[in-house]
Amino acid sequence: MNSTLHLVEQLISRRSVTPDDAGCQPILVARLGPLGFACETIEGGPDDFRVTNLWARRPGRSARTLVFAGHTDVVPTGPLEQWHSNPFVPTHRDGLLFGRGAADMKTSIAAFTVAVEEFLAAHPDPALSLALLITSDEEGPSVDGTVVVCERLAARGERLDWCIVGEPTSVERLGDMIKNGRRGSLTGKLAVKGVQGHIAYPQLARNPIHQALPALAELTATEWDRGNAFFQPTSFQISNIHAGTGAGNVIPGEVVIDFNFRFSTESTAAGLQQRVEAVLARHGIEYTLGWTVGGQPFLTDAGELVGAIQQAIQAETGIATELSTTGGTSDGRFISRICPQVIEFGPINASIHKIDEHVRVADIEPLKNIYRRTLEQLESLERA
Image (cartoon, rainbow, N blue to C red; front, top):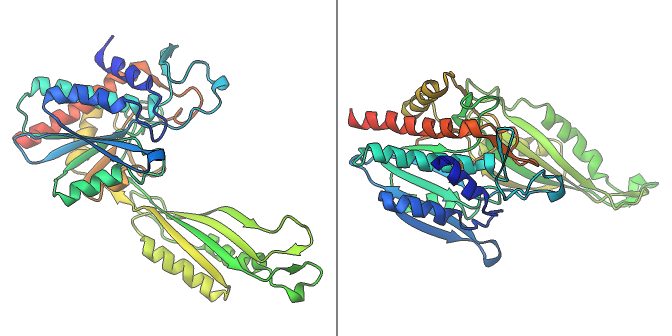
């Protein structure tokens, strides 16, 4: 069995449902320590939601550092009876490797770990400095995971130059898409106040639903921006509306609306908040509004890291990869605060979070090779 596949299976065998690392990170430490990595475990969170983070760094002759980032935690399995095999027993069928976390993202972690091993075997004294940032709180609230490590690194002045996050980004073929940025996420909880009353006497009540609807119609019809060459236009979506007592003859006293912006670099969280509040004020409704910024948008334009991984993918697969900023958020949003070039690349994402999650076995070694080739490209830059 090849080294990458063996490590993937070891990691899948660990029942690491958020926030439990379940021993995955010690497996990585056992491989990285002998390579000269200084491995630091950073824990956080309350006792009933303990998060484990690994920061492993190996200095090279150059100060510039490439970081591989990932998460060992996985989402819950869902109904076990619907799986065709135990989700925490790596199982092979029809050229596929099944298991929770196979695609998201234990295959990537194994692949970049072995890529680092092979790179250092070929370059025992590299110019390139290397690091791994691994968390067990990416699929959860992401409060005590990568964000905490990044804050600590920033506080002690550690420099990061390039980062590859091993998120599953490929769509139909390994290497057909990388993410060179992500949209920001801004969530609002709007509570419109009314006066509760009997539905037969509307003159004695004030229906907050009726008051909210014109403002909501304006918000849904607003063009927030037009996007740009890398980002889709900013999207405003209502996710939940809650009102009423359950009785059919009562005008409610409040309606609560949950909504979310996925926004491009053409907008800012502060600007979107101001525009929403201006609409609500114009409609003269009584309300309270709470905001949560889930993440700021980030973008890595054409440059050293994008060029290196594009060349690596082309050399390994023959594919001219597509750059994309679509999809949800990732820990790249935290890393981009302290690292100027962040991209995401990993296996096919069609089965992530699903029953019978899997990867193609034939993609595992090429994925590792792409990571290794990227290391080689960046090493040549440092030696130039």
